[in-house]
Length: 427
Image (tube, rainbow, N blue to C red; front, side, top):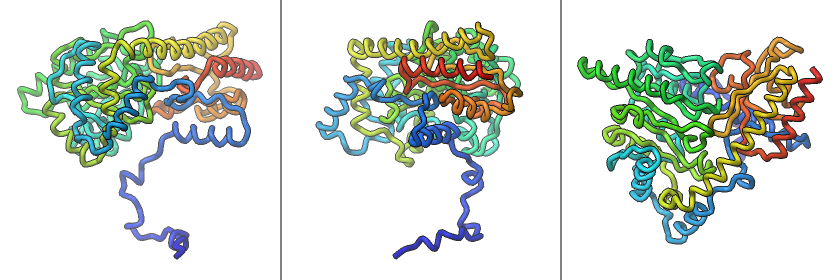
């Protein structure tokens, strides 16, 4: 039976339309751009794809110890449902890893495992936000606005700039704290590839503690900091710090978001977690469980074995980090040399993650009036795919874009620099 005819006319019944939240939600601009580049490559065009925050496994394979541990776990029969909270081995390994690497000893019951970092983020928002509650976050940032919308929250958007590495200042945050239910920070920052300074993070954390001390006297609900640190092991020349390591009382109010997706090149393995106050974990667990948004049992057990073998994984991490830093450094050197030649481009020094922030001073020149036209220019004239900061909430017309090196090689980076230089000179 062919039912295609029933889909040819959408009809007008309200029941055939999604609810208002879903109906108003747009898809990822990053994935749209990546799809366009895929179509362009399929049509025979050569493109250096420096868009998506993912890894080419042929260039950046996961650690052998992790790959072998997954195979072993599968062979051992770890294919049934894991607990909604996560397998005990992984939760214990994460607590030990944080104690060893971040100097923070969390108690049992502080870890919630999810299928990557997204379910713990969504569950944290869902557990804390009631309709109309205020969420404070900077732009550019990764997808925060969608999580606010999905939970019917209100937005307090803080626009940042290159002078602070696209990090919000304490003065920008302060006016919103009295109303806020969630403050979200991300470091190292996607998309900018910058790291929040210890002094700034300490100042913000002290303000959060002070606000919560005020709320203790009034009976108001607490303010929580959702601290997205999925890139924290990928820093270059700067040391990552947790708000809890700087201001210990922040342990009461901080939700760490983490995963193996970026620091272990395991984006498709979908193992992530939240480390948070135990009383919140009890609210988050049912949400993750009802969504079925847990990581696979074999991958969880393998990740536990990975984290428990620092003598094996540290050399791998050193090599991985060195290669990422080398690619970002080569890109940055290329843009610095273009700037020295007087070409209209500059970049921020890479501090972390797999991203480089680059500014093209082309808006208003040669018919380029939007960041989308700037992106199209680089794709058409240089064969280089990038993502403008408008995809991360920044207003149009800034000229700032993100370069990602997860699928790059030294050769493709060199060619991208050569092509961009030539395209700018043609202008």
